[in-house]
Image (cartoon, rainbow over all chains, first blue to last red; front, side, top):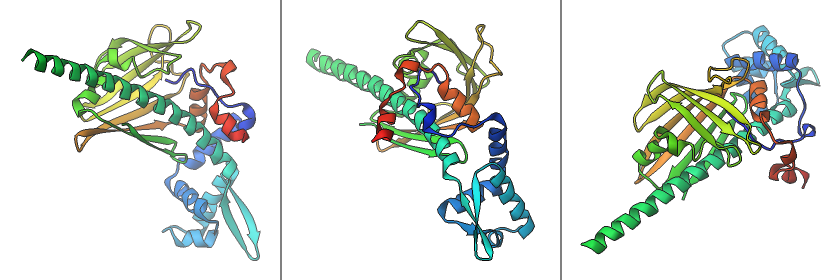
Length: 135
Length: 159
């Protein structure tokens, strides 16, 4: 459970409506589509480039790309006779921002654990020093 | 010295956090196993956590609440899915209703924590898996303090 976080103003990222969120998660629920996302994040690729890298038909890849496109995760651009697929950084940017907020929570937690363990160490050191004195 | 690396995976909606503590595996295990220690770090400083039930066994449940600056209470629960002593904990973390039962209207997440001994120190890895971007968004906006909107992160964005 997560509470009490400062959050960013709405202007920081695109807002999604529920339908769009459904599309995004339906799109990302498939392993091949996630893999395509990874590949086009590195460089834009044509559908035939992509099709060569999977053991499925050109049509199947075309379908996957179209699902990703409907979810605004990728865009297509025409280059001569081929269509190049590229990722849509805006959508992924919002996900990244949200994960960064969560990251801050954990940084805080780890610092707190470090403090607890540090205090225990000091108590342990003091006890050992007292024992030495007694001896 | 605590070394931290965090690896967000925005496509899989996972966050991996690795920390190294200058302590034994057993000591780090204690900050999870002992609810009085857990309370000292689980909640953010402005929303400390109080654990009222703590069944530290596979299938067991923990009930807790966080108390906000205005005295408001946010109830949550854990369900321990796997526990391997001094090694691994896997749990479901979610929001609860007033009576402590899971609130199905609210998001939950699965967290897995692993400890490894590393040259006299202890490496702690936590992987948190969110169900969706929408749920993550809902989680992070929960209980936010409207007055704290201009935090460090945003200042960075403005520069």
